[in-house]
Length: 632
Image (cartoon, rainbow, N blue to C red):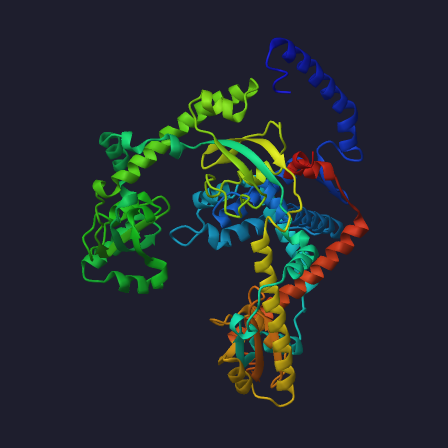
């Protein structure tokens, strides 16, 4: 298509073709998409409609929240792989069902109650401990809310809580359930065990040609050559394009002055403040301090706790009110200020301990500054090269042709499988860490015009140049690999047989020490571990197997890779007494209560959705979450 549209005749033909396609979608595709729904409706719960834009906003907000938790953005492909898209949809449907139920029940929440809850929310308190309007506005903006939208969502949340609290009132886990779960979680076990490895398997002679051929025939699928692809790609990033060695000290020093506070350690002071209704009252209090009354005694007179006046050891930028900050950082240690007219109240400020700041050195950070400047300059070059690269690609050039014309260095990988290995089994070279160009190439095909991949602030263009389909290998090609696998299986089979015999002997009264001595192994112990615990040197499989085995009984379990097996005996089983008054049991009870509430809520909402009716526009949902493009 790209090559066909590289001249004026081709562009004219393609314009007509695309016009016909657009018209046909208007008559057929769009009608199918929205049949049974409003064009802007993604789902309907009872009489409540969830619009496409509303769900897109919800989905985007929550995707960004998860990205912030991970420390990096989450792509729509990753979100679908985790099932995150369906989780958000189900949660949105649940919330809509509860909103519909609240309307059906006639529940309401007054404006005064909503504002009271917001004023009492610790999240929105300012330096003085009270509600701070500017702090409130800043936080809801960071959360992606406007004030009307936040108030509306807060009201809905309050009504949902009325339903949930009513439904879960009096619901609490039984004493028997708490004790059973406590014993399950806190039960401790001790074992003695021996580790059997290659040495205990005995001498294994090389297999005969007939044996090896037979093994290969039985396991041929394991040795099948995977699909390989030949790909080419070119990468441009600001870091690659920017040359930090070309950045002058003059430019770097300018940036250093802008970032001086970031590199140094700012001065910190122990700051206390006491607020007053008026300048006159503050001045009267200041006069009493000048006459010998201490700042702390004045606070006690006014029934203020230390937490009410102490701002802690803070930097100047850590004090929200600029006037208070200026006063605190201009006082000598131990001094009390004159009345200060702050943004929210009049205050007296006292400075205690002063922790001097540390001035940064340009020489220590010069290279970092130059690198940052170079990367910033590289971003402009990336944008220019991206446009040129797209122009070349639009003209029908391959990735290699376009890169060479622009003076870039393309990379060609002759053969790589889906897991990133070349035919010899080694990891592919030349692909930067974190670049998923191989997996992208296996989602494409030869001759497909692929969209560039974003990577580290830059772009990667790639082509699939060839595909080698999977095939059965011959024994001669991989004889060494087959023989190594046969040997591993032979060792595993021998060890399995030995451990089975040992467990039978132990069950008939034998001793683990005697069995260990006969095999040249040593008896090891692991004591007092829990079901979910980790024991140094003991594999997770052995811990799990020991909790499936009765006290004084023996068992066996494989280790890592199959060429290691364990035989063990459970020497002790203990469960600490359950103290229902302990903080641990209270936390466990709270966890169980939340689980019971969530289970009951899930059942309630499922019944509610069934009764009032729920429908989903799957095509619109796929468009919002990015699934429709992949499916096509």
